[in-house]
Every structure is written in structure tokens, then in C-alpha cells.
Image 1 (cartoon, helix red, strand yellow):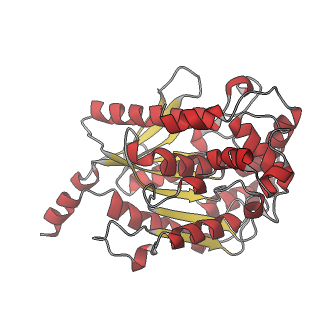
Image 2: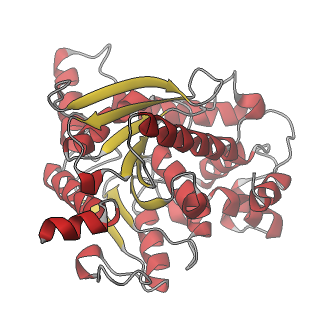
Length: 367
């Protein structure tokens, strides 16, 4: 645990349990669960949900041994959920043999499962990269007593170390990674990358979050989520009671509240020293997260002098690179703009080719 993490945890004492925390988490998870299930629906509803998930990119055709090799349920810790699933290309090209792409699922920090993101991982494996998904601690009754978002970040550390070890056992020496994730997963990878990414077991070279909460000041969520809900989620992650972080606190924070908000907000870690190339996506009609997070990211990256990928110079490592796609007709699932989904995937591949591919091998191949 770093000194910074210790300082953050020191402002997050345990002050009892709150039913309100559980209720808001349950509400958010109930909404998010609609993304990942079709059980109990009518045939038409099931079709529409599958269509929405397909439009958003959650499905990918996969034939074992033809498209790649699956190695699933790899433990990286002691808990049942401390597992990763990995997908290896059938033939790993030399220029793609040093890096991996890992995904973290969403579910309002209280639900979802790592298999929800296997379509994205498999798609990247079919593009030639070692890829996979990460399971982590969810906020539930059995985990409430010791849950914090910092524990989840520790688990990402352990998962990446296990990824490196497992790849080495197959003769693959990884030295960098990219991270993707949706919703709560997008928040987790953004927080991890900006706070710890450069010193991770596998350094994070770019991230691809979608519909990711990026800041826990009320103004960033306005008008889609009320300040009470924003405060409750931030309190949950810090492991303080709702009485200690109220709606008023996230609207007009004092010094103590600002520390709590900053601790769980990826935006607060996004400095010139910690910047990581980022390609993100948000739904123009998202009723849960909203485009305020995209606007906040744009403003911060602009302050840092960032350029969009297609306008940036590959040889200029000092200039941050940032893109944010807003799907104009889509909600939280990014379900109604398949053209934008394709554009996002194409942009992710461009980032991957620049930041994941082995430069020496690419130069050799070009000759």
C-alpha cells in the first residue's frame, strides 16, 4: 500500500453501517443488471435486449482453437471472485507479444461478473492481443464490513501480477497493459490508471472506459443523478456513513469532504505527471451517468494540452492523447448507435497499435 493510499484511507474511518448505502447500491445495480440479462423477459423483450447488447459490442463470435484459446477461472487471490479469464490468440505475432488488454465489468460496484466483458476481450484477442477479464470485490452484505474502492484497486494490482505470471508460464513476457471497462468498471480502471497506472505490476499504457463515472462532485452528475445519490455512492466507496458525506457536501464541499470526494474521483488524479492516453465513450441520453463526465474529462485534458489521437504526433510522448465519443441516441448501454460502436472499436485498435505493439518489431516488419 502506498503512502498516498494510506493517507486516503486515514480520512475514511468506519463509522457504522447505513441502510441507505445498501438501498442506493441495490437501486443502481438493479438498473445496471438490465444490461446483462434477458432471463424472465418476453421473447420480444429478450430480442430487443440482445439487439441492444449486440449494438453496444457485448457479443463476439468465438470458436475455440480457431479464434484463440480460453484459459478461465485463474485465481489471483483467496476470495471466490478473485479470478481472471484469459484469451490467447492462436498465433501471437511478435509485435503483439509484449502487451495485453484487460477488461473490468460494470454493475454499479455491486453486481455484474467478469464474463460480461468477454465479448470485448475476445474481440481484442481476434485482433491479435492477449486479452482477458477481471473479477473483483462487489459491495454486498458479505463484503460490506471491509469494502472500499481502495481494496478493489489492490485486487487489480494482484490480477495484473497474475496475468504477467500466467503469460510467462506460456512463454509470453508481458511488459505493459491496456485497460477497458464499462460504467463502474470504467470508473475502476480510470481511478486505477490515473492513481497507480505507471507503477502497476504491468504499466498501463492507455485506457478505454465507457460510460465511466469520473468525478463525484454533484455538478458533474447534474441533472441525471441527484446529489443525495452521488454522496451515497462516494460514501460507500470511502467506507464512511451517509451522515459524514451528505448531498450538501458534494455540492459545496469543505476541506474534509473534498478529500473524500477526491479520493474516489479519477479526475482528481489526472495531472501532468499521471496522465494516461484515454479513449472514452458516453451516451448522449444516458439516464445514469450522463455526458457531464465526458465534459469534465475534456476540460481537464484540454488544460493539460491534450490532442485527439488523429491529430497527435506518435513521436511526441509529452503531449497527452484523449478522445471522447458521445453516442447521440444512446442511453447507459450505448445501445442505439452501432456506427459509433464501430468507430469506438476502430479508435481503440488505433490506440492499441500505437501503445501496445512492440515498436522494434513493427519497424522490422515495415522494412
